[in-house]
Structures are given as C-alpha cells and as structure tokens.
Image (cartoon, rainbow, N blue to C red; front, side, top):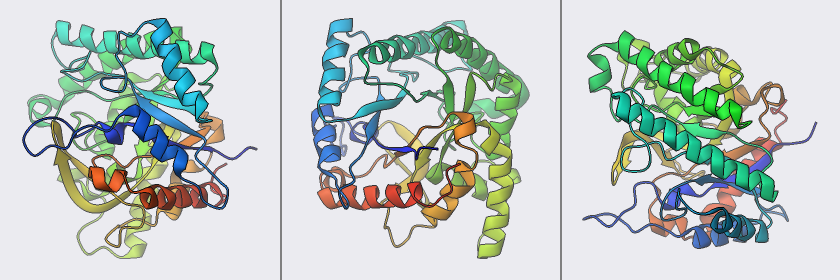
Length: 341
C-alpha cells in the first residue's frame, strides 16, 4: 500500500480576499505555487496541489490551450493536481443548489465546467486522482430552516443531477461539510443529505478537520452538539468517534487543518470554522490523532492524497516560508502515523 500524496491548496490565496475595504488582495497562482514549491522538510516536498477553478487563478471559460499552459506550469514545479473546486457559488459560474430552476441550472453548469477542466488536466497527465469539491452554495441556514425537509430534498435533487454529470465524465463529487452551507451545517444534516442523495459511488463527503470540529460543538445546530463547553479528552474522543463513524464511510476527500474553536469570516465568505496555523498554541485538535479517525480505510474509498487547508490566513502568514514548512512537517506526521489504511 502506497502512502497518500501530500498536497497544498491554492485557494487560500483567493478565499476571503478581494479589493473591498479592509480586504487583502488575492495572491496569484504563480506565487502560491512558488511558496508551495519552496517548502521542504528533511528532503520531503509537497507532491501536488488542489485547485479552485475561478478567477484570478483560472478563467472557467479558458480555452483548452490556455488550460494546458496552466497544467504545464503546475507540472513544471513537479506537482500533480488532485481535487478541484468547482465554481458553484453565486457570483462565480453557479448558484444555490436549493434555489429556483435557473439557479440550479447554474449550479449544474459549474459542475460541467469542473468536469471539462478535470478532463483536460487528465489528458495532459498532470491529474490522475482526486475529486471535484462542491457544497450547497447556499450561504447560511436561515432560508433552509423555513422548510428543512423540503430544502434538503431540493439540494439532494440538484446533487443527484450533478453526480450524474460527474459520473459521465469519470469523476466523483465530494461535498464539503461546513457550518456555513445550508443543509450541510451539522454532522446530522450532512449525513441526512448524503443519504437522501444516495449515490455513494459518485457523491461522497469531503472532511476538513477545522470544519468538522465545529460539527462537534453544534455551532449552527445546537440540537446536534456532541460535546459541551468544558469537555474532557475522554468526552471529546468519544464524541469524535461517534461523528467519524457515521461520516467516514462517505468520506472520499480529506483536508488536514487546525481550529481554535472560533468562527471566522473574511471578504465575501460567510462565517465558518477558523483555520489556524498547524502549530497554533490555541489549536484544539491533535491533528495527527484526529486525522487517524478519518483515514481508516481510506484506500478502500479511493483516497490517494491528503490536502492542507489554511483558508483565510492573512497574506503575511501565507507569504512566510516557515508557515509552509510547519504545515508540511505536520502533513508528513499524518502520512507516517500508520493511520492511512
């Protein structure tokens, strides 16, 4: 059994960035690749990247030739491309998966964009594994709460159509559990949605250590909290096993991350779990131990790589080379822990 490849995400250079008041500018794809390529720990470097398919890193309507130039650029650093993030959100290509017919058609058009680019990268040779990441593209849970059952069914119907498109292109979709996405904002609602879609061969779960920590706390669904403030280590890991036992069978993509228990938002991105630096003294997670719960049986579910997600880090942190060496060291410890099976 080969160990999982180690990837860095490119979207921390984009998410929460912008040109509005108080916002930091995006960091270019070239610079994110350079920062990732410069990281090294005892001769080990990152194996690849995961990649968001939207401006300014990528024009979703780029020509085949333009996309091959990007693939060449990535490959020139010695990197593979793993999972891709489809531009499903309002303001990109897509729109809400629980919106009206026009919105849902936009959502599906974003899936087609993702599958097209994935195919070009596969033909190029730079991409041989990974999923296409999605969510409900419905910020916040207020509208969903107006009729939870019907709205979950509407999201599931959109996801089923999306999964059929993906399957026709030889792709799998991974729905990222995160407290800001309607119908995916708690471990129980996420599980209900996955079961309602009912297409595990084509649509699974993308687990992020930072976001799923807030699942335990029931931040946007107190009725689904599995721990209370002041929990003990024993209570934490009992709850963590409870959550991961339910979601792990669906998990086909995995983000290594840290969380300090706070909720954070930047730019146009609604509030969600705060990603922290790997060695943040306020981090609540034993990253290596928590990762082991998700990576059990990973090869059976087709997981060939793991990815770091440091979404919404300040630019000064992203531009600091020591940030990436610490992250890479943490990724290596996850890989070498023996939990990947």
